[in-house]
Amino acid sequence: MMLLGVVRHAAVSYVPVVFFEWPYRDAQADMLTYWVVIFIRVFNLPVFFAIAGFFAAYLIETRGAREFLRHRWSRIGVPLLVAWPILAVTMFLLGPFAAPFSSVPPTGAYSLAELTSSRALDHLFMHLWFLYHLLILCVVASALRPLAARFPAGLRARAMDLFERRVHRGGIAVLILVAGLVLFRMESWAIDYYAGPFPAPRQLALYGLFFGFGWILFRRRATLEGFRRPTWVYLAAAVACYFVYRHFFEIGCPPKPDRTCPEAGEGHLPAVVFLAFSMWFMTYGLIGLFLRYMDKPSSRWRYMADASYWIYIVHVPFVLLLPLLLAGVPLPAILKLALVSIAAVSLILVIYHYFVRPTFIGKQLNGRRYPRGAT
Image (cartoon, rainbow, N blue to C red; front, side, top):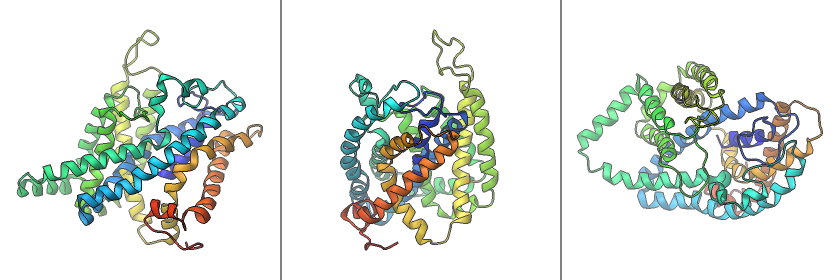
């Protein structure tokens, strides 16, 4: 999911629609790349938070609440605290540098005017905002855990048994309904973007829903086998629902009526319903896909899993500058996106292998310092 975040941010240079603040837009931008970005946004972070919830439950069960919070601060809080100011200064300098190469005038968070405006707070944590949200959810979960323990043991056991019985027998409908209700409160026809210090309750509620799902899934790990068999059905249904969602989305109006679009809001309800369908079908399908085809230990995938954290943290300057090298090359946008994504990941992997993994930085991110040259 973190590596998909690299693709999503690299793709912003190649979309013809100004929906994300970015200083550079390529002359070969096309709608295919735009649809790739939107599709990744549908499931990328929901699935990430579901996985985060699963392993958060593992940590708190094996280490206790105090060690859990200490571990989360070390692995999430410290990297956020250290990386954020460095990246903020870097992007402050690189944004105005990249802007003159753009095929359209730059706007948004990385234009110099925006960086010094009152809206700068909304972009404070940049692409690292999800770490901040994850910290909040971990603190909330650790606080709710002793409160949940006050309920009678029999009631808690029945609730978990109900989850186990229904997670593959209609339970997804309840999850879709709850997600749809939260999405309906969004100010856009997607998950609202906000990278500042005061996230809206609707954002935390949506990510908290997936985080909580992963948490309970760990407590009832026997249910994991049920994701394997119908995985391709879920993935096909997710793609179909995505196209229906996009049908409603493409009217180009905000959820609430205004002077520029008085008919706005007419398709908002069906749009968010199909968005919720697509989110949850992708979540179920991807869990099943990886359980079905990648359930054996692999040193290579473990290496990439470790590296993905570092890759995500530092990737934005790379995917901003690399497209400039291809600015005058007459290639399709989707091909440029592939080249930039592969080049960015490859370059960052070299840095990770020699200057991060065997150092104190690798220990901070991955929990241990690997010998130089180890895989």
